[in-house]
Amino acid sequence: MIIVLYLSKYGNTLQYASWIADALNAELRPFTKFRKSEISNYDTIIFGTGVYIGKMNGLSKALKMFSKKPSIIFACGGNSGVEEEVKKITDHNFTSNSLLLHKFFYLPGGLDFNKVKGIMKFFLSIGKNSLLKKPDKTQEEIEFLNGFINPTNYVDELHIQPIVDYVRSMKYRH
Image (cartoon, rainbow, N blue to C red):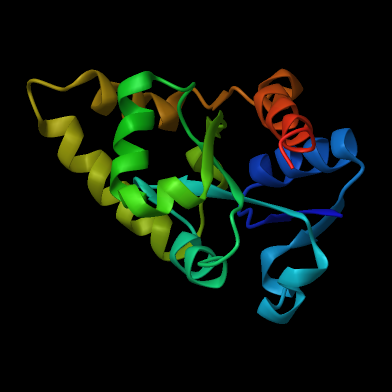
């Protein structure tokens, strides 16, 4: 049995998780509704979450929960999958040991700061205001600022194919 677990604030990760679950005929459930005692009920566990300011939401809890169970982890971030950004996310969130146990995929999401609420909105406005004053901006900083003016959405069902192919290939390895 396969389960797809997700944490999604703005809907992009949930959309990917739904597509993956449909493609693999898997159970779909919010990570918050999953208990460690259920791990043995599943042959394959897929965990998806969003990336917020470089940090994968809920990943440390998932890695602790799945410390003895290899799993597939995907992150849904604001950019389109720029290689150096994916490497930063990977390096910032995983140890080399955790990557030996778990398979990681990055799926492009989008940036729409109009959807952000609460304290996160406050911190984003501080970041925006300080960047607006900065004379020499990096490409990443320019993209961040553009997220306020021109929301992006790179979510596409085509991006799940590497995960689906990987899970299907696992059946032949056992």
